[in-house]
Image 1 (cartoon, rainbow, N blue to C red):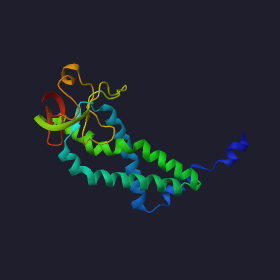
Image 2 (cartoon, rainbow, N blue to C red; image 1 turned 90 degrees about the horizontal axis):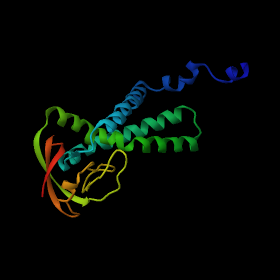
Image 3 (cartoon, one colour; image 1 turned 30 degrees about the horizontal axis):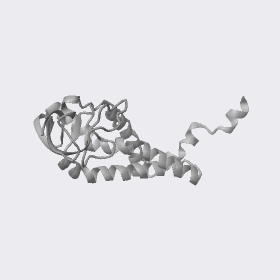
Image 4 (tube, one colour; image 1 turned 45 degrees about the horizontal axis):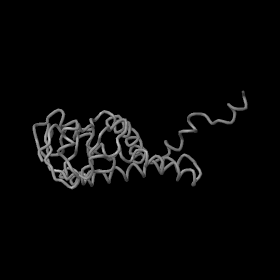
Length: 191
């Protein structure tokens, strides 16, 4: 028993790598670490009927890229400073970045705009081109419809048969519902 306690460093020594970082890097790492918690939670809470607009996807692209870069650097700094060997650190970095790649990007692209649309939205319409109407559905996204220009893992979910019957691949359709210029919760389709 005493051998296992003797080999593990005290808590202050285990965190010394983090405390030794410059304040701006430590602050960035801490903020990004705290950011992925709401990003993951919002990803689970936002309805699959919310679709971001093409205009918002273009406008938010720099913010998404910046978040991804800061996230990658933060994960890399944490792993390098925690004395993890290089090959294992690289693997952990790739896994951590891949695991939160979509939720961090969707925080800006869909989650926050969906909350704004839910609180302040009005009846709006946006035009989308249908790519596929018979895509693979999972637990979180049953009967999905793929729309052109939407980001990775973003589909219109839970599309009923009456809506699906109006859509075909390659068709341009107007989707309407409660939303803003950033996107909408799809409630009806005008083809």
